[in-house]
Image (cartoon, rainbow, N blue to C red; front, side, top):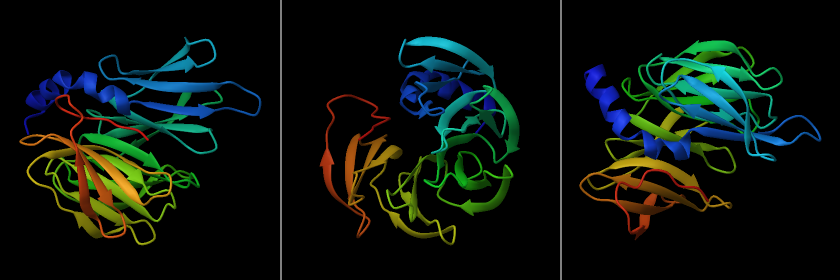
Length: 240
């Protein structure tokens, strides 16, 4: 897709991206939690003190920050830069960018494993997922998935990563081997946000396009078992 056209498309959808553009974490012991909010059009990240609901810092990152995810230990935040082909790594102790990791074209979603060892980044225009070793901030694996991957979420046990796509189908990655081992087949539409029930038995995926709604996926069989009409248009993000 032409980058100019793609940027215009993203600008129109920027309001929907809000559900994906923050990371919430606690740092360090006895400190208040902070929210890190990626600001797509100003190329920076706002740090919000959730106790006072005030912005306490602003961090310059790459071009078009889109999603943010925090390591479980609260030490780092990873931010995808849609037009920088990169991920900015923020040290939360200093609120400064300590590394810039080159990934694929138009990085979109980012998720971090529960042990904070790896960050998975979906590359919208490369049709891949980059796996970043958080110790070295180097891409150690690149996984081919469906066309135009979007969001990423891990099952609660960390064994699988589910990757949504503009094609509609969801790729299921085995995190032990970093290979696609299954997929969830959808009718025409673009799957966007995805989240899991606490026990991991079900995944909930928002989708739009010719059809719109939320699909409930049985993760034991990776099949859609129910549909929900949220009542609005262009469903995008969700959380459980």
